[in-house]
Image (cartoon, rainbow, N blue to C red; front, side, top):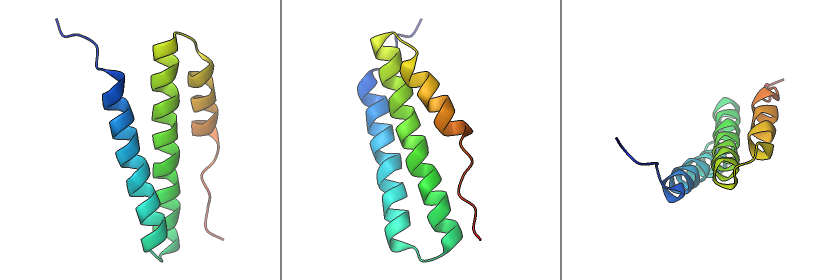
Length: 77
């Protein structure tokens, strides 16, 4: 039986996703790519919320992550 995945792995994955999202938002000029980058940033934030919520043993972060996930993504005009 495998042990639990350490919190640092989730934080590292979240940092990579967040960095890719910021880089995509800054360096790309296509509006669709910029919106996809915003979604990547929000997914990184959600991963952090769920990881810390699991570490602390409460559901506050998971509920907030579901609310962020439920929020509609930005649409081009």
